[in-house]
Length: 122
Image 1 (tube, rainbow, N blue to C red):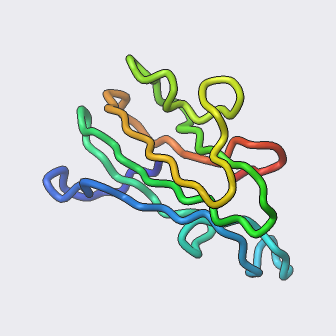
Image 2 (tube, rainbow, N blue to C red):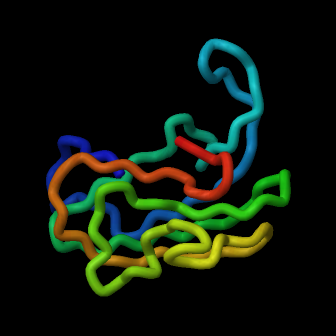
Image 3 (spheres, one colour):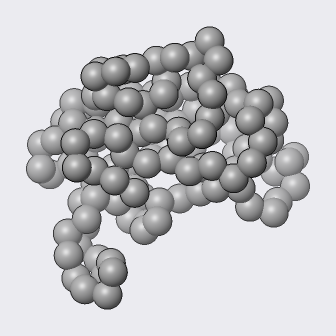
């Protein structure tokens, strides 16, 4: 999650992400990478303290791999199965399936999210 300077009343209520592979310029050379919504880095999610975060993930990876999203640095109070660590806090998201992350945050700051399955990384 990235925090941007924007008024709290303008926070998004729901954000749908589509995980997929594309060939883009990354690290100065063309290579296949797994990206979200055709963006590298992936889209930021701006929320206010106490907001409920809802993120819909569709696993459309052509490689037929599982995936999950880890919300780095956010404490999962009463929502331990939303932490996104596959095979530890949740089952990974299987190919061609969807998963909805839904949790409330009270942790102020600039945080990031990233894939947390196998060799996937942000």
